[in-house]
Image (cartoon, rainbow, N blue to C red; front, top):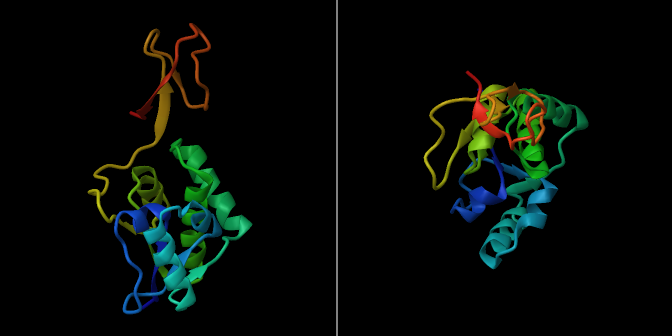
Length: 164
């Protein structure tokens, strides 16, 4: 059986996840350290890192590329930190570990489903459906898969919706 590990993002820490020595090893990415603004979250991170329970790793370019390709397919809206978190989990999975992303974010959970990476939520309920997204013009009904803001035909602002 592969070793279970947690991959943490700032939202998981803010929502109440507290790293401790009894749990599996935990990983995060350097960008999360920059996002930690509140004192309690900073203390959680510093304690976990100094105790050796949490490791800070930057994912490989190959893993980042794979995640970006999936983001392009699904059209989920994610930050660079989100991409790094998913890429680190993907890389750990490729190395034979069993990663679980701790994150209260539906876009991350959606992408994790597509990448076949486990996830858990801390405060919010998890997702119930998995989506790929497209953009639709509310005025003329045209549908776009490309990432544009306005309809090419009539100029109306596009809305994001799940693909049928």
